[in-house]
Length: 290
Image 1 (tube, rainbow, N blue to C red):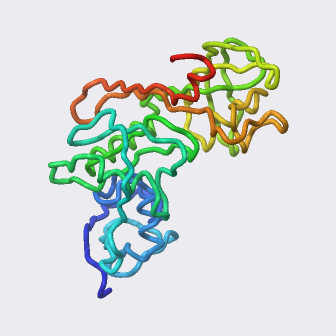
Image 2 (cartoon, rainbow, N blue to C red):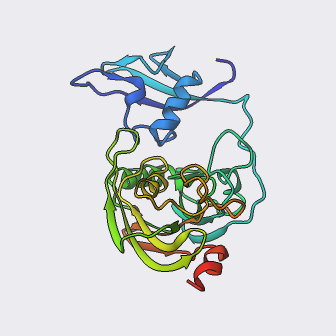
Image 3 (cartoon, helix red, strand yellow):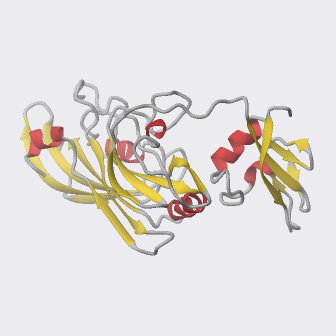
C-alpha cells in the first residue's frame, strides 16, 4: 500500500439485509459519485473493508469501515486542447456543445472529458472535483452535454437522470415516409424503453424516398436508444452506419443526430435551466436555417 493515499472513509450503519460491496448506491461516497466509478475503484484494488482489500462480491453486513484510496503512482488525467462552446456555467455545473466525432470519456487521451478543464472555470466550492460528464452522447452525435463540477452537484445530477426529471430533446434526419408523430416502446437489451417523435418537415428524395427533420425525445436512457427505435419503425437516422438500411446509408457525412436541448431544475439554486443549441450546418444544407 506504499503508493496508496487515503481519500475517504465511510462507516457503514447497521443494515437490515446484507449488501454486496459493489451495490452501494450512487451518492454514498463523496469522492466517487457514481456506482461505475466506485466499481472501477474496487476492481483496481483501491477499496478496503476493515483494512482488507475488498472485491465486487464482498458482502457488507453493517458496522464495517470502508476506506477508499487513490494510487499516487498514477499520473493525473491528460489534458487535450479542444475549444468547446460553453452554453452555461456556474460554480456547480456546466453545459457544453459536444462536437461530433469525439468520445465523451474513456481510457484514451482524446476524449471530451480531458478537454473540460481547459474550457471551464475551476469551481470555488470546497467539494470541487475535476469536471465530470453526467451522461453520454455517442461518438458521432453532437449537442448539449451536462457536466458536474462538485461532488454534491454530480451526485444530485445523477439522481435527476435516474429519476428521469431531466428533459432531453434531439433533432434528427430520418429516411423514408413516417407518420407525423408517434411513440415507440420496443424493449432494448431486454429492458423497457420509450421514445417519442414528431416530424417537423419532410422533403422528397429520389434516392432515400423521403428525408424527414424529426424532433425526438428519449424517456428512458438505453444504449443507442433513439438510433435503435428509429430503425425499428423502418426510418433509421440518416448516416447511421450501425442501424441503417443497406443501400440507403449515406457515408462520409456523419450521423444526423443532434442533442438539441436540456431542461431541468438546478439541484443547488432551484433555478429552471433550459439550454438549446442549433444543429450543425449539415442540417441546414437539407432543410434551410433551423
